[in-house]
Image 1: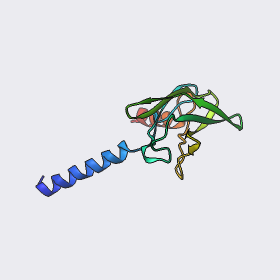
Image 2: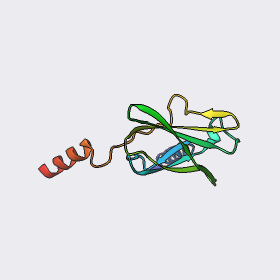
Image 3: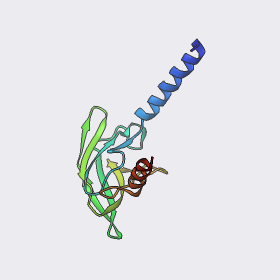
Image 4: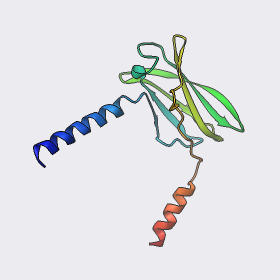
Length: 135
């Protein structure tokens, strides 16, 4: 690779890494499963809550044709705020909001709302295995 190609690759890698590092909201696992626990990472540095503390969290779960709110105990660490909670077994969607000093961050246009997978294998898992077994 020539010097220009290397420089362009390095710049692209750096900017991509910065974009990922500045995400205000991350859940682990990436695709939470109903009935399992989920860890929520929130970094307010690029949000309306920048510089405010303490941050509190609320998780809204859509379950049984209704929305139910659960407090998310948040603790500060070196990269932001972290909370952990158990996803109700019948939940199909989770939406998180974060608040501090009377302000609330709902995520803007792209809300803080990961999809919740049902427990057990999904249709995609089954189809993948069937396709794999057919070869």
